[in-house]
Amino acid sequence: MYETYRDRGFEIIAFPANQFGCQAPGTSEMERAYAYKKFGVDTFPVMDKIAVKAKPVKCKGIDPASYEEFKDDPDAVLTAPLVDDVTSSAKQSPVYEFLKSPPFDGEIPWNYTKFLVGRDGRVLRRYGPGDPLEQGFEEDLKRALDGVALTAKPRNPYL
Amino acid sequence: MARVATLAAMVTVTPARAAESPESLYDLTVMQYGKPTPLAAYRGKVSVVVNVASE
Image (cartoon, rainbow over all chains, first blue to last red; front, side, top):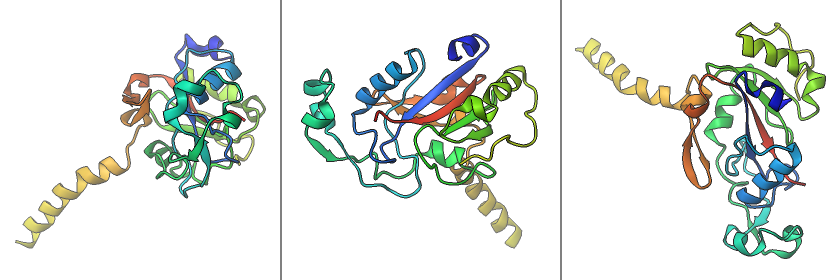
């Protein structure tokens, strides 16, 4: 789907966040590699790890200093030294402060929460962590790419 | 005199408030590969911002 719409100006901007069940313990590089594998493409930007929640979370993560040694180890999370992940306990990223402006406010509940942002950089819609295609995403995307206003109400209240 | 003081206050306060609440995602700068990366590179695109994890 990304490749279908990319030529029309669609981009995915991903941020690894180790704040939900401590499920992103890898270094930014490791989380990036995982995201590329999961989505099956590696042409979208995966930024460095950030805090997406307003309240800090305590999670362990792989020590960035040991990245070189463990980068090719699929079991790195079990074998590499873990330290307090400073990205989990960091101040909320300004990006998420911006995205969570009303009416799109409310804490991020879990991984894969999505925000559709228009060409002008304003948030158009927020989607819960589930399948975006079940939340009317594709129609919203087409409208956004065409510069047409989205339908007034979300089909699914976001969570 | 009071009017001058009010005007001065507005002039000093306005830029700071603008920085706190940007109007566009593409006005922000994030880190990628350990380096500051302006999201201005994506201005004009329709994007989906998603928080990801690996487990």
